[in-house]
Length: 249
Length: 280
Image (cartoon, rainbow over all chains, first blue to last red; front, side):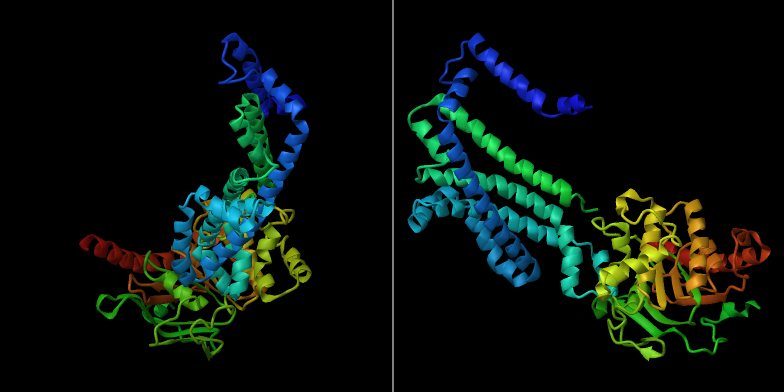
């Protein structure tokens, strides 16, 4: 039973990929510049292990803080838009316009405002996470079934009860989609934010590796970023399956 | 005995009506392009009476229902009286136990939490609400399913959960809009007999919409027939079949006589809808 579960997980595929990397690169004499041998990548990872761990934690921290603040603001904005039409009409288009400005364009300003601190990365992460969460919250809250609303009204429900017992639970699966998108974007935001200047973090290490053409280091960082993203996304998926498993009908 | 066919309402009963509709109209749209959904409806339902309402599809049954539930306001021509008191627009909200066609269970709530929803809204404590619901589970055939979720139940069971929710919203007037419409014939006839048992025990006043003539006769003390749109009351017939009614009552001569008469009226109205549709 346990072996079956293991076979059905992505683990065997990962092993196959690692083996292919390990065997194919020397066999085809691929230049290290394009794809270094797996052994070199592992050796490099071991040589920078403490820096890598510190960078991992730093970027994780920036992502998580940025994500949570962005999620809180995004959900609040989505609820506000759903509640008051005038707010949606007046403010929402501005958000859309702001969203279409690439985050890179804001980077310098954010660094001037917040300095080379954790805060500037958090701000970029939350800025990216905010928008999809706000949009999905708004859309989810608009999905409440009119017939269920009529039923609630016939029970004499107040607007507060209507929101807490019907609209919000209806919206949660859609909000969850926004949260997952927001989480990936927050990670991207934290990494890009580090490019504008810092000393610790996966983004900083990426930039350094790029400058010094440390190709195995780049691969170490790509894999580490991938691991971090998978960890965050997997955690969100776990929470979703446990608490928000229903779907709109 | 069947002279009641000719008159739009039955005035024989002199007790004060539980629910009374006097000249109720509902028009939609601006005056020049107006559609009349419901016109000149007079209807009286006595306390504890089980009244069934049939009519061709699109005849304004649901509009009428939504007005009685307080979800939409009737036009100013007439009024709706509950226990002899004229009701303000939307004043009926929270006074009538209303069950729409779809079960409308909340997928994120367990069976028992779905059933206690109206009690929760009324501010009954969770513990007291659950105690009241638990007492009803055997009667509703849902024992052992308290902590299941709606998607784990069959259509008939979901409908019983929805009915339990309606019953826990303890109002003397219960409005049921084709509650068994989506069920298969066997489940439906079992649910009908079960509903009569529950009704006999609790004696609420029931107004039950259906498009199934057999169902209307089998369940009702009185069958009310609506005309094609704009809907009004075409006729009403008192059903004097003895209670409790077994399934076999549907094959008695008396039942078939009533059915023949009502079928003629309903067919006539359905043809109007059909003819109107082909002309337009």
